[in-house]
Image 1: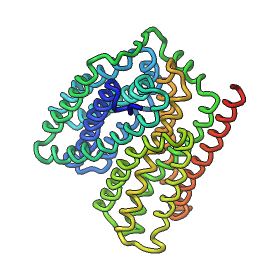
Image 2: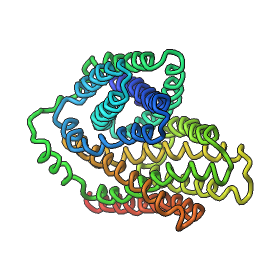
Image 3: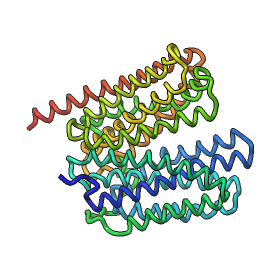
Image 4: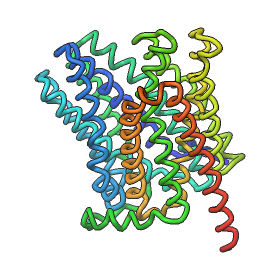
Length: 397
């Protein structure tokens, strides 16, 4: 059986997504550093991160409708070209312009992702969807390693103009790869956005209703992690910025292994099982890491622990996306996926807020174990929903 990379259309979309994500990471790393150098203000730098989160929440209805009503390849092509053009105002170097460009790029990326994820099942067979999502997860971690490194290096070597042209090049390469048709059916363009989005929401039924809880728990836990991780490294390990960066970066190494393993795991288990077991394993590793300081504070132990977290993190992402794709019809897949992406972002933001509010009254140790417990709860819920789904399918056949 030919793997997903043996299919030319998927291979081109896969490479285009990879190059585009490198551009996203270059910008995500370089612009906040540039803002901090320019202003010396942590608040101004934080604002740059915030404007990268808001567009995906605001554009969820539009992104999903466009992914379902327009030709998805052409939408991705137009977005890639628009991302390249939208970078040009950075030549001014103005702080306000930098934040506007960051917001526009985040908005365009929010349009790109639902189209890419909705298109994927059209390019591969149902039996290869999970393996294909694993390759996409592999892409994400490779892009993170390459793009994040390039963002800092290019900014140091040639300043903001160098970042601009490197990023422009990445988006134009992606556009070239997307220029040739994939040979799938085009979409139609006549739909009222809000009404069409509501029609898509009605498709969230059956197993997907349960996935609302699973995705919410995953995002809530991840939001807590983003905040608590920095405090954990500082208070429990006595580390600083370098240690925080190294431990966050090392997760991408495990992510590469997880992405490579998804294809093999997909042949032996369903998407439901892959998601459930990944979440349970992730919860166990997280609990070991959070409680590790009771036994040792040796930095090497935590390098290994957080590297291991990267693998189930990627396989869980591939399993989640595969479940959503396989239980959604092609006509509404873009709207359903964009809604779940918005749900994830919203609960992740809630997790960040809760971590900040509860860290003092509950204590860091309790809250860290709660964070791991949320992943465990998501895994157990996945098994229950998946079992019910299989049983329902068997009874109706």
